[in-house]
Image (tube, rainbow, N blue to C red; front, side, top):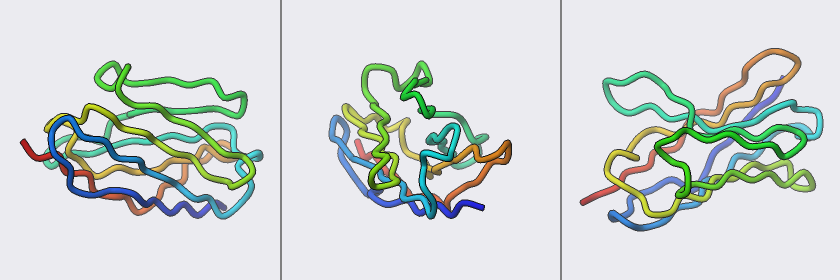
Length: 115
């Protein structure tokens, strides 16, 4: 199993930046892929960005050029740097890990972008 704990959410103005972090309970070297998803009120959960064990990345079109996902294998953390934030980025952000074919989720951290 993998426990995931997110941090770094908060309230920010349009155009601002936030950095989310996700700490894993085990070495992320053993985790095939990790990522961030988000869910806004009344909407389905959607992929934001993923990163695999070879540092390959994938982004939703809506965040390309603004968000950057990274991983620190020494600290067992995955981060999401979010720049040029927009009101439509407001959501609960979840960390995800794909470990041995099963998905694991954190509790989520709220990001609110005010205009």
